[in-house]
Structure formats: structure tokens, C-alpha cells
Image (cartoon, rainbow, N blue to C red; front, side):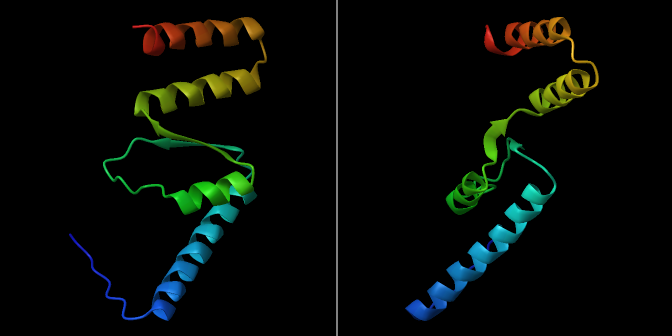
Length: 107
């Protein structure tokens, strides 16, 4: 599916850009309000799943964005995070980290 927008003058373009920024700012504020300080974004077949404006707004809100994360990595990180916050045991954390490094980073 393809969409086209016809812009006839600069004032229309300015309005479109302003509306886009306001929309993205609203989404970013909802993310911040939820208490998020790190945002993992799964790899997407959509190339424009994230744009520079949204990344800039998230950076201004002090939210770290990690793009193109594999689905398996997100599941693993969420499990480690849950274990880490429930049972702060450094040995478990390092064991999980070592497993992840051996599985995904050291090929």
C-alpha cells in the first residue's frame, strides 16, 4: 500500500512537520510517563519504524534507545531483567550475562 501527499506551498509543509512533531512528542511523553528510561526496539521490516525526530525527542527526555534488537534478545533481556530485579544476586546476573555473550556475541 502506498500513500502520497501533495504539498503545494511551504506553509502546508510547515503545518505537516509541526503536526508530526506534536504527534511524536505526545508518544514520547507517554513513554516517559510510563517510567521508561531504556527503550528496546525490535527489528522491523518497516525501514521507517523509527525516525530521527523521534530519536531526538527521546534523547531530550533522557531515554536511551536501542534499535534493531532481535526478538530472541528482547525475550532474554526481559527474563534477565525480571530475575535481576526480583533477586539481586550478582552471581546469577553474571551467569546470565556470560550465557548471553557466549550465545549471541562470541561466534
